[in-house]
Each structure stands twice: as C-alpha cells, then as structure tokens.
Length: 353
Image 1 (spheres, helix red, strand yellow):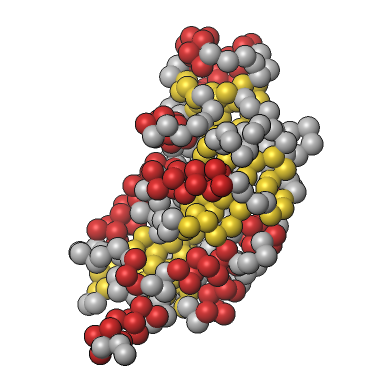
Image 2 (cartoon, rainbow, N blue to C red; image 1 turned 30 degrees about the vertical axis):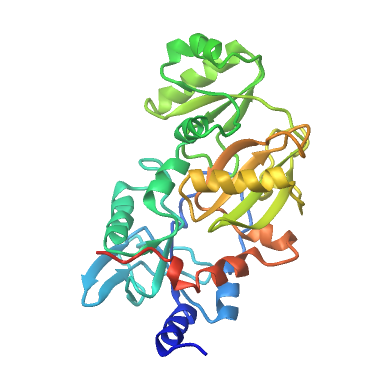
C-alpha cells in the first residue's frame, strides 16, 4: 500500500499541465504557397488528453511578471493561428492575457527563428528570461542555440565522434577556392546557410567552382554577414527523421528525395512513410539527442550503405521538429507519446528562479 506522501506525489505527477506555444506566423520567407493545417496536431491531441494549450505570437508580445508567475500579452490570432497585425490606421487588439507559472506550464517557443533574419533578439531574451525564472522551456535555449547553427552542430558532431558530412564555413567570398580544398571532396557540393533555412529553402547543389563563386558573391552582396557553409554531397534516395523525446524514440519516418532534386522535405511535396530503424540507427539517434543536450528533437539521418553495421550520417538536429507529417504516417501517435511523457513532473527541470 502506498504511503500518503507517495500518493500525493503520484497525484502531482498525473495532474494535468498546461502548454504555451509561442509562434511567429509571419516568419515564412518562401515565395511559394503551402497548405498548413488550421488546427495543429498538438492542439487536437492535447484536447484528447485534457491538457490545456494556449497560443501566442512573438509579434507584439510582451510578458509581465505578476504575483505567482507571469502574464503573457499577444496580438489577437485568427482561427488559423495567424497573428492579426495592426491595421493601416495603427489600430491593434490584444487577446486575453495568458497567466502562466513555472509549476504548471511548459513553454514551447516555436517561432524564435533566426536572429536578425526571421527573429528578433528581444524574443530570444524574453524566453531566456522565462528559463531563468524557472520555467520549463522545451527545448532550453542552449539546445536551441546549438541546433540553430549548422556549423556549430557539425563541430559538436566531431567532438563526439558522430558521423556527419564534411563541412566548412565560407569566411570570405575571395577564399572560396581555399575553402573547397579544405573540404577535400569533389563537385557537386552543397551550399547552404548555416542558419535560417526553411523546409529546404536555402540549400543548393553546386556543380562547379565557377558557380560556387558566383553564388557566394551574390549571397554576400545582399547580406554581408550571412553565415554560409559548404558541405560534402552524399547521394541518397531518402533520409530519415527520428523524433527523440527524453531519450526514447517516439517516431521515425523515411522522407524520399524528390525527383530532379536533392531535398526530401515533406512540406515541399516529398513522399513519406514510416520506417523501421536498425538497432544501430536507434542507438545513434538517442546518443545524438543526448550529446546535443536535448529533450525533444528531430534527428535527421542519412542512411549508410550497410544500415545494420555502418553508422548513419547525422545531417542535422532540429530543436523544433514539426509533428504533423510524422503523425500522418505513424501507427502510434508520436504527439500523444510526447505529451504523455511530460505528465511525469519528476522529469521537469527543477524550478529555481
């Protein structure tokens, strides 16, 4: 029989918690249309589990400290969770303030974007302050920082012997040839932004030195300090997205490379299907998530030729993985497994404001 203390602790562990998702609905830099679900999958599953979920947008956001926690003030959102911006006369409306506290709320900053590109330093500082006030930020800002830099992620992989495509930073438009020599691989190679790519936009396959020089010069002409990298090109038919939550795999999918393209993003039209990972791929995904200091991430893997015996390549780690695509093809709901995981309050960070 459980003691009273154990019973109280059990009750606390299963007490419903709340989620605040802070997005940035105007963040997209793509010039092509794409359909987004009007109701995110996390909303549907949260409702099924009795978890309260609230939404805010970083645009116009301000957070006030109040007795027992904080008050979140955000511009109104429409039924598709798009922020309603001030009109031509400068009129704007705020939604009802959202009252939060560290004991009962998980904060999911889904729209921080890239500083100076699709995001503001003020937004970052607001979330960092909540973290220092004792809130559970999923993921924490150290993990966000690391995953938001493809070059730093590459260095992290090297530090921990994680197999990953060779990568070099472009430090100046006049040093491109020397950088390619350091990369020590043949064309074609990959040129991409180290930060700020969105669903494959910002990733280019380059066939020659001449093309590479021109692309680098043009890119840096319009954004002198944009961090860009070149990367070894590994030809594949598909890659794998593995969702890891608290050291456990809750979902995995195969993303097939699109015809006449190098990308496999579901949002760009690539086909997806559930995939059974090998033991090696499973253990490596969990290890990568651990080395990146993450709680909930999408680990993107390139399969090796011998999947059973040869390590996969880690392409990148996503600190804000989308769940809609993997939810559609999974037999068991990854979103449900994630939300049920956090019913256990004992794994929440200790609140020490």
